[in-house]
Image (tube, rainbow, N blue to C red):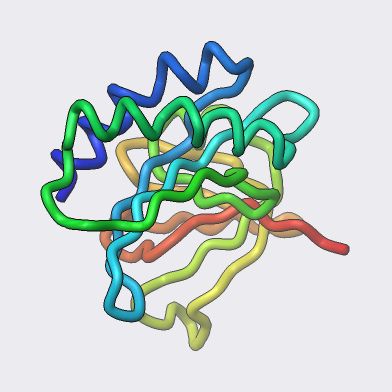
Length: 151
C-alpha cells in the first residue's frame, strides 16, 4: 500500500505546489467498505475549500491517466488540520517547541496519552516537556503524535 501512496505523492506534489500549497500527507485507507484516497495539504495562512477544489480538479485527469490504483476509490483533498499528525522527521523538526499530544500503545505509569511541548526528536524517539518534567518515549512505545490545540 505504501507504494500507492508514494506514487500518488509523486504525482500530486507538483500540482499542489503549483497551487501555492504543500503536500502534507497521502492516505489510502479502507473505511466502511470503501477505499479512500486522500491528499492532505497545507498553506501559509490556512487552506480554503477553493484550494481543495482546484487541486482535486487538476488531479482527477492525472490520476485517471496514471491509474495508480486498479480498484475504485473515493478521492478527497483536505487540509492537514490544526491537530495534524506528525509522522516524518521533518514534521517533528518543523513543530519543535509546539504543544503535542503523544499516544502510546501501552500505558506508561497508568497513562496512554501525554500532552506537552515537543522538545526532542531523534530516530523516532520523542521527548516532550510538561512543566519542568521531560518525558522521553521510544519509537516502539509511540502509537501517534499530533499537534495539540487548546481552545
